[in-house]
Length: 236
Image (cartoon, rainbow, N blue to C red; front, top):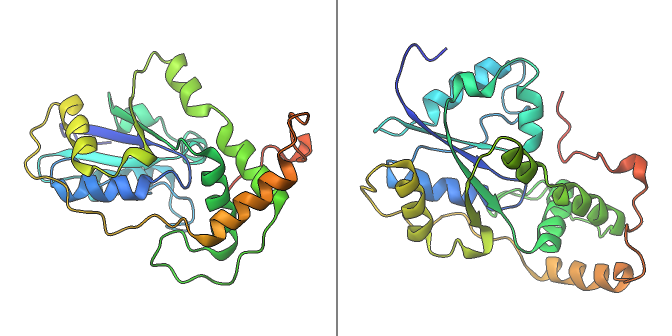
């Protein structure tokens, strides 16, 4: 599959709206930590197979020193494992687990992006997002599922854990990745072009949601059990 090529792999294990694009941009700018992106997004290349995407990641995700990096969401993993074994294509990877401390902020950001499709700060919204308590509840429950921690525990993996809110110092994050990977950091990361998208709308939605749903006697919220397997994308 890899033609006997020798390379090191970094897999950024994340969830939507956790800052994975920002981290990927920082890593790519060093020139030695790979070029992580959403190579496994099902809608990216219609008609392509999981094997096609693995080949894409091995090519486009590679930096000059041979390090290959990609991003992976749980939903991407579900799609890939139908046809390929990830470990065959990316053996012995360094797992970088990126999470967000502010889960409600992440859920609100996801609920907004699901509507206006502005996944990055420079994207043009397709319309105005309309507040939905149920949409935020769905996002909260989806993002709170501990799929990555359970995966790591099951396989005895100790990932390098990074937190979105602490990514302000790009140098620290990249230094930790380089150290765990065993490569020399040949250049410090450039300041990220991508910006955090949290603004007045997010804050207004937070206040309203807490006012409506912040009942300490209600453990599960309003989303019925039948809808708890909601997915943020509509892949095949």
